[in-house]
Structure formats: structure tokens, C-alpha cells
Length: 253
Image (cartoon, rainbow, N blue to C red; front, top):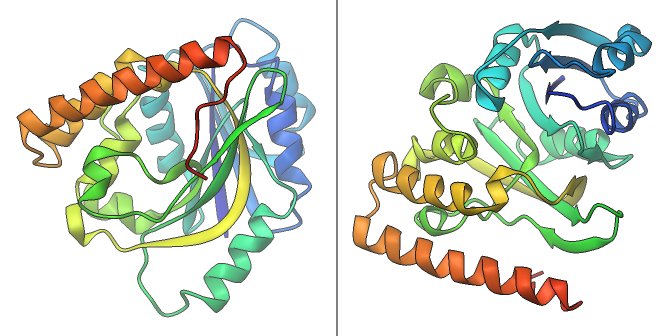
């Protein structure tokens, strides 16, 4: 039922933890790992769990979205999930999704189903819980959904194409902008994944790409997009400074 795609590059520090969080789920799944040519122990970890991994390749790529596209082309199941090598599925995540798909959206053509996630710091301490229903046009201003742990129906890519590899951090956001208000999305109000903070999407590059995608693909007013990006940048840096003195400024639950 589920295909879980993990893009890796020198991920030996976290990859085994991510794989372990999947193989204990007790649901039907396949794991696809697309590696960007790692020079650490990533391949050894993959070999250790090869009985659980349906497809693995290690070669240079153009970034995470290129890796995800390669994974999509190898996927055999209807629902596709993307996990970072440092993400972890919660123990009942796939079971919760299975029940949700069966009892809540059966006979309805949803192309995207999201849930909630816990963001943690490098020590594993919880920073915040994130993830709300997909809303248009609010999505133009804020990535309200939690992308890690979300499900993408294979028909989403058939209908709207693969990820745009010109993006470094906002390609997942850009893809969901393409349908605009026509995206058929559902929300499962349960926490399914832990995501470690950091990465390119948390910084200035992520904010800039979010703004450009909102304008180019979403049709957002450039004035409003840049105004919103400025405000997001101020909030981001303000929270970062407060975190340094031990204050967690995330108020929205």
C-alpha cells in the first residue's frame, strides 16, 4: 500500500534509525533509497537491511528533488511518502494511515493526505508540533501542511508532473501549488513522524524559494509575496535569537 522514499547523502549517522522506524510498522510497505553517491557508511547500512529495501541506487544527482523523482519512477504502490534520512516514523503511523484511508476517504479521489509532525532539536528535545489542513489560498503565504510523513497518491504526479529540480528546498511546496484550489487534499489529525530541525528549508534560501514559487506557480501578487517573505524572515530570525537564550517562541500548536 505504501512506498517510502528516502533520499540520502552521507547519512550514516541517522539512516539506520529511519529504516528501523519503518520496518517495525506492521503494514504493507516498500522502501526505496536513492543515494547521491555517499562516501561514508551509507551503503553498508543499506546492505544490512537489504531484505526490507525494494530498490537502492547510489550515484551523483542534482539534489533531493532529483532523488525523489528517481524514487517515484520506481514506486510500485498507490501512496508515496518522503522521509528525510534523519526523520523517524512513529510506531503506529502506517496503521493510522491505513485506517484513515479505509474508513474516512474510501471512494473519494484524494491525491494528498497529510498529518502532523513533531519537530525536535539535535538532542531529540521537542520544539513544536506542526501540521494543519491544506487550505487555499492560505497555502500561498504559509506552508501549513507537514510534508514529512504526508502521503502522495501516484495520480498526483501523473496529473501534475514530478518535482522541479531547479529548486533546492521548496520543490515540495511548488508541486502542491500547481493544482491551486483544485487540489483534493485530506488531513489526518494525528502525529506520524519526528523531524529534526535544520536543513536548507529552514533558512534564507528556503524563504526566498517559497516566495518565488508562490509568485511563479501559485500566481501570488509579487508585492504581497515579498511582503510576506520579509515578515517570515523577521519571525525566523527573532525565534532563532530567542532560542539561543532558552525561549521557545513557537506559540501555534
